[in-house]
Length: 312
Image (cartoon, rainbow, N blue to C red; front, side, top):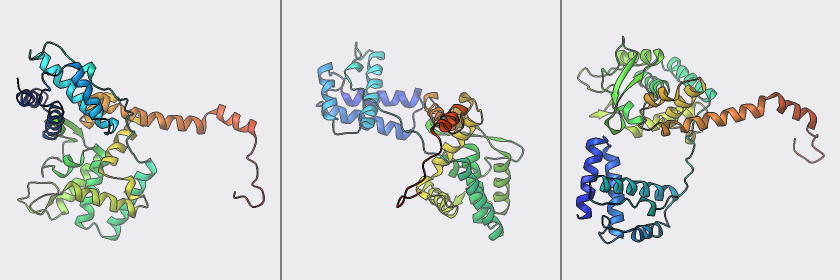
């Protein structure tokens, strides 16, 4: 079987059975066609020695990129074996670089308070003008429900109902999930819907021009708010607010499976990254507050006074 035919069948399977998103299919297709090209169009028929040459070809890439490409190829060869196109699975011939997953950036509770304090100041100073009401609704939904930026800006006008404390949306990969909506967010959205001067024929909750608010504009609005609140803009984005939602819920005792459902993660391994964030917070807490640490500090005695010419 030609590589192009096998790759097409694999991508069709991912779309039909796995509900893979369009961007995922494009990325997988690109990785597989690139590997096929490196092997002279003989990816499907490659032996272990040929596959091992891919590792050498990928040496200039980052470990994360190599890990992603190898993962795609492993899924591809498992598919070839399941379909009877090959009788063996040569996944072990592919590189397995160790990749340390970066912890997601998040915000402290104090940072969140500063954002909402700034929003309240805007509401008072600008007499609750429509743009301020829109921004309040956007931030309440980002932090209060953990929505992805794309999910938020593309919400239909009547996605939220006053009598229903949740919404059902189709997120990443076309998967539907139930998203709880806080009372604060419901009030903010209702106020925006009532006083935002949105034309009656608009299908979007957050319209802009001929469509809905763009992800880029949402990003800009969040960063402008951060600067106004005294938070370095480079530390924040809509996705950082989603991370803060997850991290703070976990700190408050939320169940990991419940958090997975709310965030729309297909794999709980993705959600577990927040346990590492929470663990870092706990280690910090132990080092700062544990009685044994206090005893150790007492044994060491007070820090020496700075000498002449030294900074305090």
